[in-house]
Image (tube, rainbow, N blue to C red):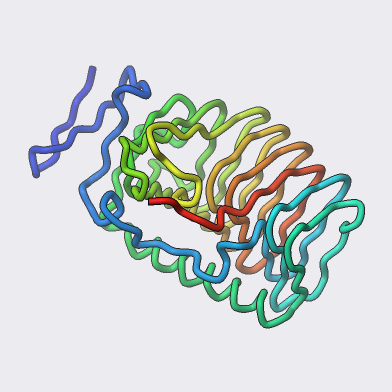
Length: 243
């Protein structure tokens, strides 16, 4: 087992034999104790895009749906959006602004980020914290476990320089009090979620977000400069974070 001790002498990064019982530990920060990142007006949205929000098939969004400054929302029906639909309206524009604020605030935490041992999140078990990758792009080819360590307000923030891609049937699992509302994937370009993937978290992408057939997400999808494209997906906004 390789173990690197940081200068504060309190935390270690384990690069081998990582399990849900021995999660990678991030640098201590307000991420572990409070909520430095908040979605504000965007938290009620299952999906919001700058240009177009497009659904094919029987997508179901439990939450609000919107675009701003774009005004094109298509595929509902047969898709369903249970909340408010705002195509270029004030509500959607406020949500887009909130997403941009959260994105920029998260990027501002880069100096506190812990480096992960691989660009692939598969097989990792992580404690609350801010994380960065050894390469510009990030993937998840299997299962990522997020261990709240009984801290329900601990946040998991992943800073990705370019793309996020998940394999088919990959998933994000929450244990020990971790909450979907406190998970953020901050994507420097675009995110592509594989077929039947079960994602958990808020995905804030600088450009666009695409979900392939039957993928799901618990959290907000926010495309800051491009489109959100859906195919038979299930999205559930996380409007409340319990303490």
